[in-house]
Image (tube, rainbow, N blue to C red; front, side, top):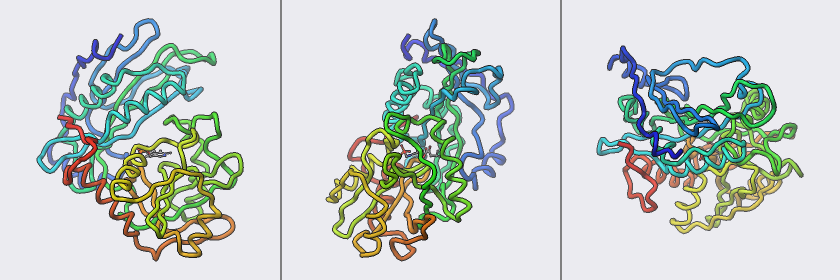
Amino acid sequence: MTGGDILGFQRNLAPTPVSDAEREALLVNPGFGKVFTEHMVTVRYADSKGWYDARVEPFGPIPMSPATAVLHYAQEIFEGMKAYRSSDGGVTLFRPDANARRFRDSARRMAMPEIPEELFLGAVRELVTVDEKWIPGQAESSLYLRPYMIASEVFLGVRPSAEYLFGVIACPVGAYFKGGPTPIKLWISEEYTRAAPGGTGAAKCGGNYATSLVAQAEATREGCDQVVFLDTTERKYVDELGGMNIFFVYDDGTLVTPPLTGTILPGITRDSIIQLARDAGHQVVERPYSVDEWRADAGNGRLREVFACGTAAVVTPVGTLRSAAGEFSVGDGTPGEVTLKLRAQLLDIQQGRAKDPHGWVQKAL
Ligand code: PLP
Ligand code: COI
């Protein structure tokens, strides 16, 4: 069955809508991932039926048996994307087709059914339409959308589930790092790794985040904002952060970023930054980048800026790298020029303030 066959979502809207005053109060400082909109989308899948039962319902618990497969073997994937209120009052999505494709790739890796792109996008648009009032209007604010899929078969055997639940939830968000674009501090995880060749590093599956948490907790204990994971073979090369990709900016304007070899998430922000940097005349090199190089070039001044990027974090400057051996910094504690320029360009395109030369922004409504 194709997505087009079931795009009629059955709407069962919240009987007592949140008042305008209450919603406005929640939108003032929503933080990240704490305030949810009033509705959610769900679509079911069974091997025997294909995709069926597409609905919009009030946001709330999903009752499930304690023997549901996802609770035991973590067969789960998700996406992260944003809807923006544009300057003309409309609502836009940034490269939603790229999220749909990555969701499909994640599904393949996790032995889950592929959701048709038009169903994935239709579900996102449906939720944005129903909960439009929850899209904040301030700069740097947006509606974060979280599509996900879980193995829903009630069965403890170890094999791909025969049933799945696909859903979308949404939350209004402000800046991910509360300090705005001030440089963050990273901790290198030397004990724990995130993803090995042949593993699930390139898939956006919950398991990758579950295994990152002990390292992220260590980073927090060390006074750092995020953890940097290294390659699993030599423990020498930078892979990515717990929830972001990373770029290094050199004195000749070259940008270096770790390559997509299957162990890191192919970030949509990463891809967009590569394109915008090339458009602006920067050379961008995708190659393995070692911590030794980072330290040496920070010391000799050739490495001018480091930044992290992702949907939630947009573009965030990185100042200090800390490990058991000590710490060193790049820059003077303020965000670098190239970092700020790329960040502003990306936000301006996403929020409709600048031309969109690559056709990334799509009208949601
Ligand atoms: N790497 C990881 C581990 C992430 O969780 C994310 C966030 O989604 C990214 C990179 C950046 O990906 P994107 O730019 O598509 O949000
Ligand atoms: C995102 O940027 O969308 C992420 O998924 C990062 C994190 C919140 C998990």
